Image (cartoon, rainbow, N blue to C red; front, side):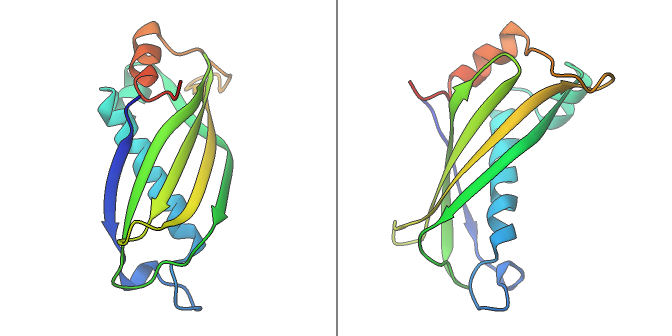
Length: 137
């Protein structure tokens, strides 16, 4: 199984009033991961919309925070799929600080819906095969 792995520097705009990374920033990093996944399988977000007529739509987000991240640190994000169905996928995320300590775990469920009807719509065989590279066995 392949993973999407990337790092992000933590800047002042990531910090909330309590002095650590804001909860919303983790959701933004998850979005970056989803976009990187689509690019990795050859279907950047414009491709999945324009070529397949699908709108990947989030229906659930969960994050378990374990340790704080602070200004000047760097986060490493690892992402993979834990479930892949014809019309949905579950994505898992791990967040590590620059010392390699796990700081948070996340999970999102996305539904593939038709651009015009807004009804759940199956992936093409080619798209399904692309996603399978990132599916945990």
